[in-house]
Length: 80
Length: 415
Image (cartoon, rainbow over all chains, first blue to last red; front, side, top):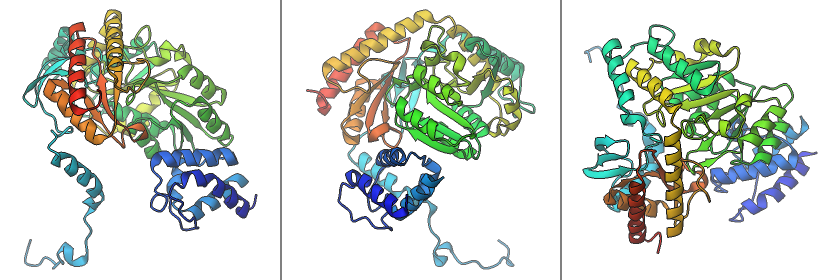
């Protein structure tokens, strides 16, 4: 899957979690811009993990602060 | 300072940042809560303790319903005698690590009592339950290993994972399918540890250990179960949820504490792993701290041996839990579980403000419960956590229910 395809799929997954309809860009942050709390993060991460059949450990999650970082991390993980 | 000391700018001159500024939001929340005039829920003082179920708290005679003293061993005459004797014979403290001068006869006897209680080959006693989880998890799951755990796991479990630098993979609370999916995705050849709790302390619900342990074994993972809130009470011999659900033989490590049913302080791990004892040399929270005082291990050992024969007390505790759960449900309170599953009954509050108000109203009635709030609670809930004791009498439980009814109506939680 190309990075653009990963991006498209994640955009679909994030929609129900984007309650305030924030415009999603590479630099959009989950904690501040999207105001995800820990429960939302867990549910959102679980959706992505199921969609791509990958594991994003909490250690990796801590490094993924923005939407752009998430797309490239998932792209990398689903290749391995 | 001498005259020759170098001249240093005052901190404000170089733009020093107060490291405490990260606590400002929580300081603000606390000040707002206290400004409402409510008694501070996190600053209670017990001036006198009368029994496992009664104390003078903030000047009032109070029934204790939030102490995790499930089996009421804290004032057991045999337990107290053992402690006094050890204090007399061995002194007030060991002043040393278990691996140096801190292993006394009492520590050995305490570990022997644990081995017999659980029917396991090895037992290791730590200075607290927190350190037992921290030490065992951090030592056995290292960098590159995977820890699959329930998202609602205790702070000591998360801290153990962080200390060991293992990959932390949480799954939704008590969700068997979510657990299996994560195990299936772990790269081949990686070390795997599944961590579960018998009873989850916030809502008092029990894990489906039978199914979860079987799945963990299917994927070749080692299994650690924290039975802190079930020891002495759940299972035919009080060994916990793993015993009750018939999976003791498939659990690699059981972690427990002396600060609940046992009635003192300390933590432990029991296991049948043939190499278990090497942990005594490589587990840092075991090595780099002083061992428990002789009086503590003596009270613990005596209490553990008495708990082996505690089936009457267990039966009474179950009756208490069922009665409290049924009574509160009838009154219209929302509880953490539909049916009583443990000695914990969690009452769900609409928000922190109502929770603190209800907590204070109960305290004024003469009842102590735990106020639990985010981030310690799941799903950002505010809870009034009640933990029952085998020493609560039938009459006391009725009194407790009446107190809940009056307080609930005055605060507007029930109608």
